[in-house]
Amino acid sequence: MRPGAWLFLLGLCAILAGGLIASLTQTAGGIRVQDLRFKGADGVTISALLYVPTTATPRTPAPGVLAVHGYINSRETQDGFAIEFARRGYVVLAIDQTGHGYSGGAATTHGFGGPDGLAYLRGLPFVDPDSIGLEGHSMGGWAVLAAASAYPNAYRAMVLEGSSTGKPFAAPGTPDFPRNLAVVYSRYDEFSQLMWGVDRARDVAASPKLIQLFGASGPVTPGKIYGDPAAGAARVLYTPVTTHPGDHLSTEAIGDALDWFGKTLRGGTPRPLGDQIWMWKEIGTLIAFAGFVALLLGAFDLLLGLPWFAGLIHRGAALRESRDGGWWTTFVLTVLIPVITFYPFLLLGMVGLPPNPFWPQSITNQIMVWAVLNGAITLAVSQVFRAGSPRFDTRWAPSVLIALAVVAIGYGSLELADRLFKVDFRFWVVALKLMSPAQFLAFLAYLPAFTAFFLVALRALHGNLMVRGDGAVRQYLTGVGAMALGFVLFIAAEYVPLFMAGRLLIPLEALNAIVSIQFLPLMAIIGAISTFTWRRTNSYAPGALICGLFVTWYMVAGTAIQYHP
Image (cartoon, rainbow, N blue to C red):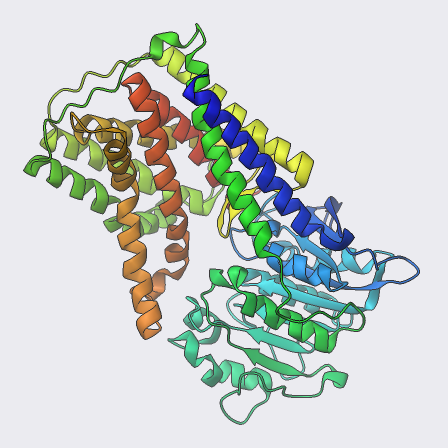
């Protein structure tokens, strides 16, 4: 049996096993999970996952919770909260914000989708309309505040996770609005200045904005309940030990939300706060994601055995004789230039290429500008430090066809997981989702630029950094290290100061610091795929084309659409 067959089978088994683990976790105790689409008041389609416990019936309506994710995330990001709310007898509606996931419209419009989500949840016959909680993370907090503003008497309590009231986008908060509020603000949250006007998240209790919201006379005491829950004016601050995106992987942060709704909502099934199983959903979808990568590699190797693609087979031939000074110079530049230019080029993309009818996604536009400019730099560096003239055995027509076939097989595996288990491939903020029709059109628009970047970058990688005589392990370490090591250093440079002193190295770049976390696993996957394909074809082209398709798909399906006609 070809090695690719074992990889393909391993990948398929991991996808099925991981999907099953995730499915069993989110349906534990008989919870029913439904994938919904419904029309909002303005005709915008809202996408949601609905979690219905067995205790929720028209005769015995259950309390409900509207759960809303943050910026450039999706409904599945709230799975930890949704699973645990549902296990405690709450009907949970986890929506995609407008412009995110499978919801229509543009990001930040229509109250972020919050008012429509609350109206839909209240209309379900098995939900108690007098016992509804609103929970939102980051920008999702602004969505539930919009819902509370639109329907001030339609909910009983609210949890803001890593979020805030007031400017820049939320309804202003007072000691009476929103009703029965818990602020869960982590001690290492990256957005403390934006949200609460303090330089360090650990100082949030002394925020004048928070003090005013709580109606307190001085710094807020974490864990102390201010105001009267019966009058809807209760306030409490929780400060779990994690970061802004870390709220989703924190039993403490999730437990704080459970604690507050347990105190303020009527009904449900009490469980100890420490009784949490959501992490098995994360483990399951992580296993499935790893299986997806193995499936791609196995599919590529199996397809090489077909007559159509047999001509691609050539053993990878390194050009470098040794790791001399030129090699190390090239390696260091390959590692450092992408991260040194990360913030400046993203800023350039934000200013110079705003969302438009052709390229409608702000974050993707910024990363595209970063990629194109890094491709140009790579071309220049390769001319100066190249080892010689590499002889790649590149055949374009079969390379294009095999890349399309491999990624189509991978897409089909995600479609299978969605149909069988109602899950995607993800871990934490790293998520691979199916594309909506609007996202597919964006995919076609962004594909040429990202593919061009990978053609340049991976040609330079395999032409300038692979060394003769290296075995498979050193070749993979070279490929993965060259692509990912810079982001290891970059993330450490930002987050060591955060954990040591309470602030990112560059606090104004909090959003992009969080975005950079995704680059570490993505670039490692790219290094592995490109090395695997180069070793079998002595060409950078198949791997670059696969990576162009995969990364463009990942980007457009996982971020937000800001431009919508």
